[in-house]
Length: 167
Image (cartoon, rainbow, N blue to C red; front, side, top):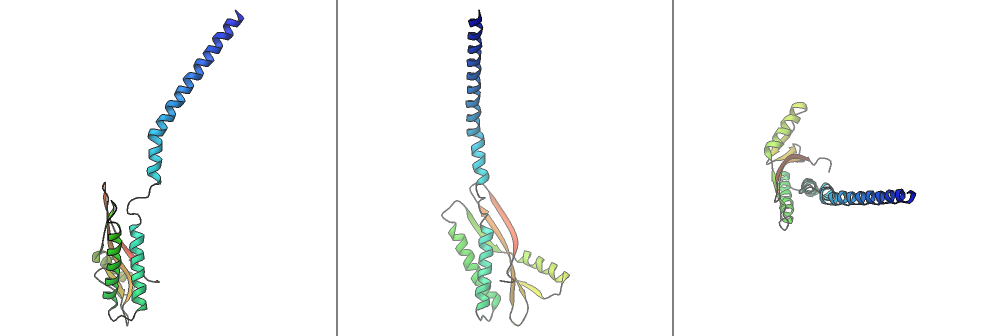
């Protein structure tokens, strides 16, 4: 009788450990199917997240190029240089599933200038989305841009003012 009780207890422990093992396998499989894929998506960079950085860099480089040259028409030269850099950014994504379309936004630039001129002296103006300070030679202060990012699953648009002063 004593051995019969130990024997049934041993079988019960064995059965319980089997049930726990099956439950752990099911939990592990659910984690792999549901949890792991979600973790990968969180760590991935959003498509187009580098577009703003690239456009900012293009504006600053165009400003540096105009500042160091002796250009008669600073604004026109800045626009020409900036647009060439933007074309390069847009063409760099033609091979991928992400498409950039970057345009100068005169309305955003004008709004920023009006707000600034209301708060301070009225020495800023805009032309083709470029914000300038009037002086002996126009100083490029910033540029209004629209950045459109298109992927196979979404389209987004960002409007921003990129400040170039101090560069």
